[in-house]
Length: 197
Image 1 (tube, rainbow, N blue to C red):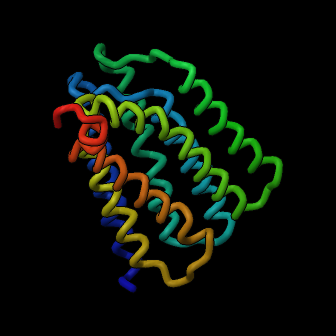
Image 2: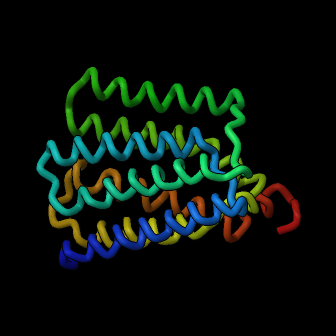
């Protein structure tokens, strides 16, 4: 276990990565799916509130940064003429499932359930961008995902009490961002589908 003070370094790395992604969005180099990035800001901010409710200390800062970073990207998407808000049926379905997960947490009013439903909501929110990264990785910037892996990894190394409230969102965050890096930087989706990488 490392000092939980290292979590602050992870938070800085995460916010830096999202700022680079936001810059690429404003330039028109990256085209974020606004549904995903909106829900990616909402679910972690709710999970952060639940973690604080359960008394989670500095570990909760990782979850806060995972919510604030996408909020920066979402705002940047409205500053770019290249960004779009074109919704497909899958976007509606993922958005609905994500919001349903958050509504179920409100109904049950249990912080651990809130974290689990926030993770489920985040998974549904991620699906449109996972599909886009699978088929069109050139529309994404990997710079937001590598620092988030480091952020989650540092947080996991700093956890001293292995409860759902402490490790749930960091483990999920680590895994989902490894998937994004594989799809975007290493073009795994294009390789699987037989297209040129």
